[in-house]
Image 1 (spheres, helix red, strand yellow):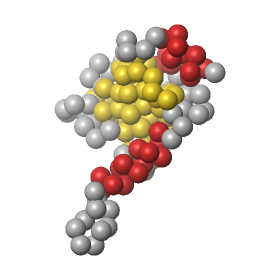
Image 2 (spheres, helix red, strand yellow):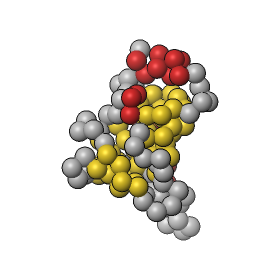
Image 3 (cartoon, one colour):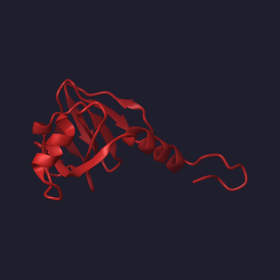
Image 4 (cartoon, helix red, strand yellow):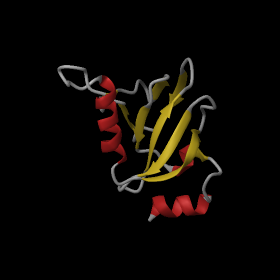
Length: 122
């Protein structure tokens, strides 16, 4: 993740550092889908603030996603992304979404839903 010779970080190193920063103190909940976007893939983590943090993307193309006004979105490098009328165009590069509620998610079956809710709502 460093350039040969200069040892300066490549973009992957910056993205990895931001992933560590975003997921600090989080616990894995489950894979999930965002309500209203069947193409979007996401992994849900519970944050210290008690709300889910999502890493979301699409495998190919793009998907128009409507988010609540409370949502905050960042790219993989930590730069905030502006929402246009509450809409986000998801692409193949993952984004981090903060400020969603559990009702906005369709959790996968890898964990017990009541256990996941207890983690987030404690």
